[in-house]
Length: 79
Image (cartoon, rainbow, N blue to C red; front, side, top):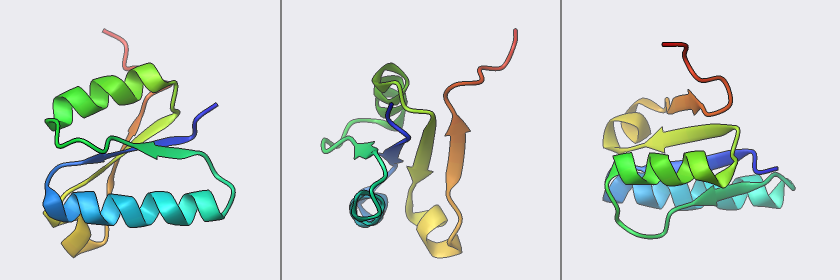
């Protein structure tokens, strides 16, 4: 199963996402990302359909702070 699906919120996030996906793959981990410039909401929908356990969202604020937003795609909140 896919471990992490990276979502980028802007151009800076896209560049960082490329680097992170490459790093994870070199370590033998399964990581994917959307290569298009789709809105975050559509990327998250694709991440959910991909079977990934987590979505990592990166944009300029996350890159600057060194902290990413992580969304658990397996454990959905109960309504």
